[in-house]
Image 1: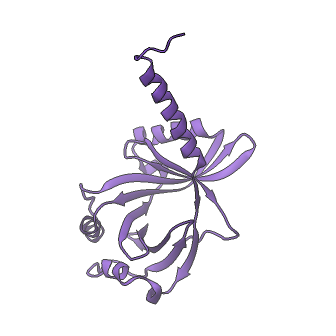
Image 2 (image 1 turned 135 degrees about the vertical axis):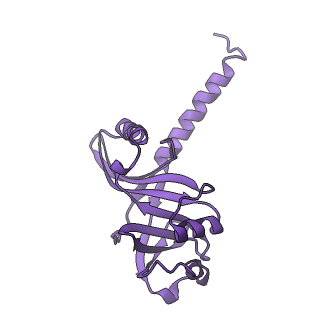
Image 3 (image 1 turned 120 degrees about the horizontal axis):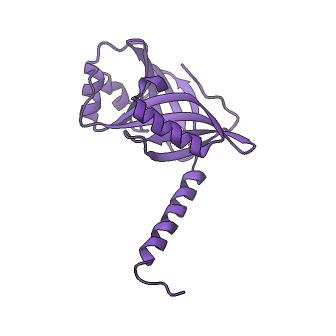
Length: 197
């Protein structure tokens, strides 16, 4: 059978999709989270909260991954759980707000559920956060004024207990604002427990 020029893009697309799906499956994420004192937090991260008077009782954590160290500030604001993540130098990376699945719009919730049902024989969402990324000024303004900034990028981060055949594992899913999968990582542990609020 001859391969025509018209069929080449199809084969190329097919191969790319296979490679992409394998990469999604192969990614692993490890985080060792430990509580730290304020004096051990990068100065730049502490400065981010200057002039935001409605935030108090911040708990600081250091996160160590395979090739990354980051710092996380956790606090409650208006009875809602927040976490603000910074890189090793104290530059802001994102703001995350914990929500329930029922807080999402029906179409988004259905799209996410359909994708999880496709990937898992059965599943349970153990944590769901709205994640905002953008530049420092926009994220600072959003946190200070409790208003969604149109310049920030919105993602949904889910920790999912997923049963596939006989295996049960934890996965971190990142979905776009319209429910498209951005990344999937299998969470691995190294004799450490994940700290909660």
